Image (tube, rainbow, N blue to C red):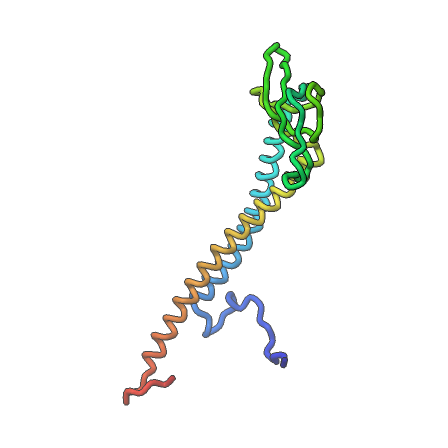
Length: 193
């Protein structure tokens, strides 16, 4: 493939030229502003998302507590066809909260655990079995991932919007060029192109 001998001209939309159109200047400003807003928006959106993930995880941690529960019935082995990835099954458990209220719910335990066995479960503020709260390392990983996704999403939204505006400008520019070619018709009725 042959390389073009024409030098690449940077920032041509802002240089004075008789060929420069008003739409070229507008497009240049749109591109510049879009990149600026994408970078700034990505930083703010990423930071806000990371803070929201950390706040949610800390709230979940504050509202959860570990209790010792007793299996109500034996955990049945589901068989090879229904084995889950973590090899745990749902089984009814019972526990007493610090106020003396007895609760019954289902928890995930290893298959074959006998009735009357004691297990540790996490409960939320309503006394319902909940997932174990995130550890510090998991919270950090989730906040980083959430921040990156939110930042990339906001930057993509801004840059995508700028791309749509640029497509509209390009369509308008092509319509103007078509109208200019129509005006270049010769007096004898045949077109130049």
